[in-house]
Length: 254
Image 1 (spheres, rainbow, N blue to C red):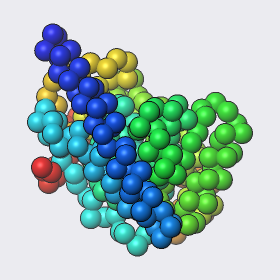
Image 2 (image 1 turned 90 degrees about the vertical axis):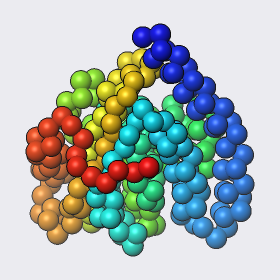
Image 3 (image 1 turned 135 degrees about the vertical axis):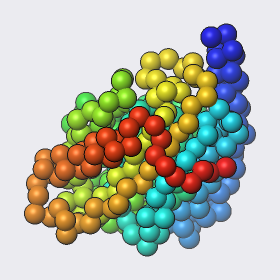
């Protein structure tokens, strides 16, 4: 336990210090590209590099990524992922594909990290506020129509037990409104490292990202949001049942 506390302290100290060091570079990337890169693709790519540092440098978190080739650069998606841990946000940047996060407003207030989220024009949400939900949905719809994918956690919050929670309908309403394909992404292992309560990291655990087959709009346009929500959730459930508790087979990523 003492070693875990010490290694956790080192990790969080590295995250804070590196964020302070890297945020000025994010500002430079934004300033140099904002006039011609309307979707801020290059800034997001820099953010992917920034977030990926924390998994690259940690040998305690061997990662596998499967199905990244299913994400077409010329297609806009409503991306949905299960939510197990605070680390999920860092881990999902490892796919190095363009998207805009939907994130609770508190994250935007975190120094450096939150400021960079604002620069990227990620979408804010005040949970439990109906007006904020309406604004979030409108911002997501505009973002999708402008050519940027959206990344959402349809469970709304992290699972306490790792068991898949019920999905909220927001992401699926967006897919129906915009006729954009849904892209399910399954995470595994992050809750073993950092559960919902606490900040002490738990030793060595493998992490996996599995990009499932996109769900094209022609498959779901005759459904309502509730039915589409349940259909997508069942795809997650089926995948988890097929793979069991371990990480899915896939290509190791250094």
